[in-house]
Image 1: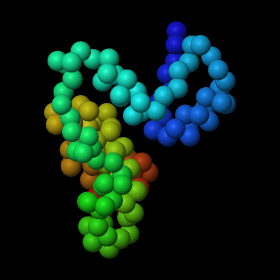
Image 2: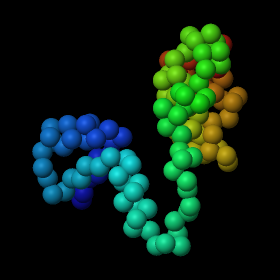
Image 3: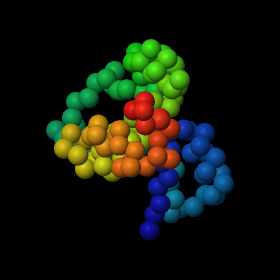
Image 4: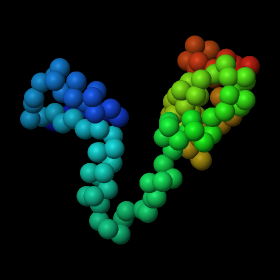
Length: 126
């Protein structure tokens, strides 16, 4: 069998590769490189057109969407909000299972469903 290690950071990818050692059964790649490799291997007709300028990353989120007023007087950092969106609202198994790919609001605000220790945003601010 073969293994694929994927990380967003080039530095992390190199670090793990150095720690694990060279092995013909293991590959190391960044997420963006993996996506690029997959897209270039698809037949031309199967590739959906996606404008890279529409990609939302943390830098763009912080510049365009995050404001200290929208986060209860700045008590919640942009990074915390970004992490919650990526981890729970868009990236959880519950979000994946929902028809629109987003965690329903009622499940996000209900502490018992999400777990009181899992999310860094207090229940009263969700």
